[in-house]
Amino acid sequence: MDYTINPIGYISSSIKDRETAPKMEDENGAVRAVITINADVSEGLDGLKEGDWIELITWFHESKRDTLKVHPRGKKELPQRGVFSTRSPFRPNPVGLHRVQIVAIEGNRLEVEPLEAIDGTPVVDIKPFPKKFKGKLKDLNE
Image (cartoon, rainbow, N blue to C red):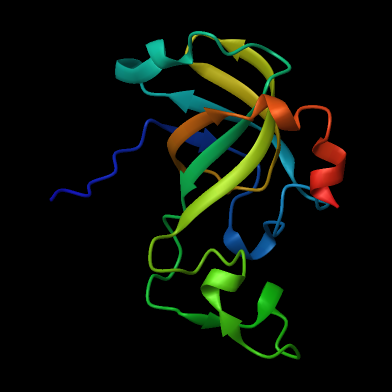
């Protein structure tokens, strides 16, 4: 069985390295960023519009893949936990999940915010945010 994942695009962001990136999209430092979708899959953007909330699935290309326990949020004073009980980017399959709003669409480029991913991060997929949760975003962030 083939488990190859091919990026559908890449993120252009003012966040240039992991060390200065915020841990979550709702923290200070998350920015407006641009996602450039590859031309061969850009037709898949049809139906998205400005103002839509989407779930952006990324590949943490700079993350360690052999880490199974971490100090939550990188705080050494906290006891280590398994990566599957945290949102650490260090994991066997470093998949990122980001809830962002589309600010603008121009051709194969989406401008979104707030995003905490670093510049050059590959985008694996885009999914619409479930309609049943629209209007409840504030509650979900708490």
